[in-house]
Image (cartoon, rainbow, N blue to C red; front, side, top):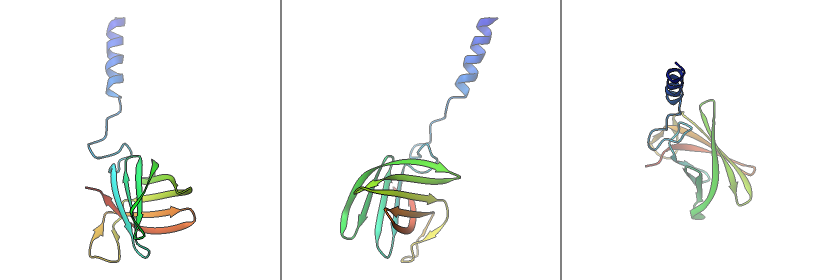
Length: 126
């Protein structure tokens, strides 16, 4: 009887094991790789798991830095440090226009580097 109960408990625990995310999807439910842009001033932010790269026309190759990801209320929050300044990128699933093209992006991106606030659009990266 005990062996049967133990087998049942083991089966129940196995069914409660976390399900790994689909390929290309991070554990937070957002794509592991995201690309975002902003205009006036022009900038880009590429997020790939625990790494990000911020680029501007003055630094087209960009600067890579380590990030942490978490979600809150369906919003992705990415934090890190860039050139000694704190970075917070907030990604929301809401359609977005970059204001420069006819493209509609599936997400908005609010970016704060130090005290500088920028807004833009984002999408899963290919």
